[in-house]
Amino acid sequence: MTHYNIRSERSLIDLFPTLKPVAELKGVYTPELPGPAVLKPFKRLFLYLSGLPGWGGKQFFKDYALNLIKKNQATTQGPKMILSSRSSKADGKKGLVATYDKNAPFIWQRCTDEFRIIDDNTILGMSHFDLPGFRQKPVMFLLHRAPGHKGV
Image 1 (cartoon, rainbow, N blue to C red):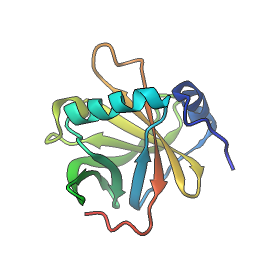
Image 2: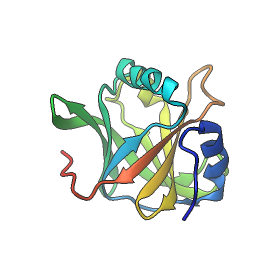
Image 3: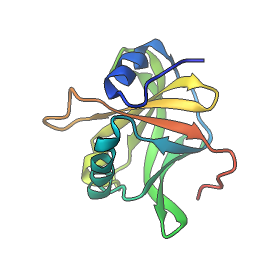
Image 4: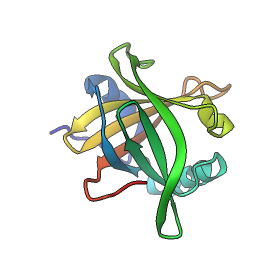
């Protein structure tokens, strides 16, 4: 089992290239935001302001995925992502990459997500934003398999 420090985004960035790329994902995964606890409200605010208010993870299908939004105790569909196998921006390894479709909020249309396997139930995600000031700053997140979650 791979050990990681959820409170250190830097350690997750360093861990990412050591992990095996994901080839395929199916089902619902709930999120965990890394970093010091004091920064988590700011990360949630960023998600809210950027078009993912109440982000509740991702639901993966064969060739696409949906972001899940939690609102009033219910889960609704968020921006759609197209899944493909590509070389990683981080280290060139080929694996599953998600790109947001043209109907996603502006900032997410310029984002790609890459995924690596921590263990059978945990995925390490890395988001890359093709925007000035963000291009060299990956954003890390974890996804945990949620077999009892029905998704959307």
